[in-house]
Length: 570
Image 1 (cartoon, one colour):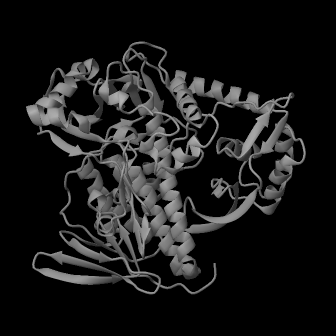
Image 2 (cartoon, rainbow, N blue to C red; image 1 turned 180 degrees about the vertical axis):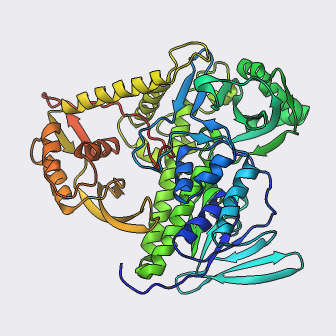
Image 3 (tube, rainbow, N blue to C red; image 1 turned 60 degrees about the vertical axis):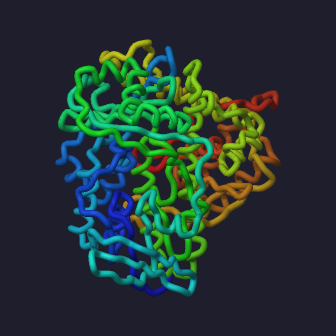
């Protein structure tokens, strides 16, 4: 990148994980930032179960000692009792340590303490954090106009002129409301009730520290072990039950939900509820665009789906890192690329959101709870399901032959890999069985691909286009070229014109999988092993394999999940 470095004025709204990570990233990149937080920390928040990818980001920001000192319970897996008479599954986070910052576990945190750790770290590293200061308005600015943040603190008020704004203020985002860019999700018309219990059954062995997600007739329940012998317990049910809740009251309705699960009732039978029941309704939404003017919307300001896979804090940290890297890029000579970088931020963030939406929808779709209004209302009705009309990922699936079936197939692969091989959830569960099963599945996948007699590119042309990525350790934004087609790119591995030419040749000559691996290996500067590049292109639908008779070969890929290990993707 060429040009002179200019020091931008940056405003961050919100001191939760998104705002704190944005401030930490900006300080790592050498920038000043002013963070406005309306409350005094510590303060209460729900969303206590984290993903390893979040900890990987925090590790690279130097927070590993603080996180370890806090003594939060270690979360090695998420265990599901999903569907009446179904066997339990565990989504284990065990993964090869391919880099020093890769985590094979997450944490079950107390959010008040966790959020304060992050914000205190930002303050210690030089961020200008202004507590108990409420943002009352934001003018997001534009190409030739700076942004203006209006604020008040007690009897004081003022304005802060900023080159860029990071809105990490959560579901109450002032920018999303002001510009009316929030779109409510017609599929996840849910509500949640939750509280905290002291005592109860604690699990040991390979179940120790796991979050339990348990379906029942009218929804599902989370059970999160926390420190100090506490459980966070929440019931996610449908807004169609709002009348019942009003009739008997939130506390009685919550206890009714708990009683709907034998597992949860048994876990809590010797526990005491120690807090009132809290309620939140109809929370699933996304913004039409996570950028507006000179502002980036991060975390819950931009989107929220459903807490089933604990992705909320990760999306906040993930988007905050991208926003900080983008602002740094502009200050280091990339000022003429504001529009494409912001478009990249929009596309990358919404793609991450879509991955979770697709993943969650497949699990709601496949929950065999009989005689259930809740689960019947959440089946995917087919390729013309109107509730998914504004979901790009669903529109793409619906336009493919067998697209909806492929969604279910990939989810089924994961469920099979997680299966406990036991009808009962017992502490004899050994997650090494799951690791061995994944090894066998990977070996079968490799065997299938090695047997492909021909590999062809799907589509009329192979495109090579520039896009951006955040460097894993410097957190600087980098520009690279990627291949793709139809307006979509395989954005994990940057490639070159030589790669583009090789993949374009697949529609004019017959090349087996093994020959393609060989030819790809002859190209200089491959960013990964040839098999990895080919595998990802298959997974993203750019390549199709055929047997010796010219018949297409179906390859059973697992559904992709974000936030595990050191990268956004697994």
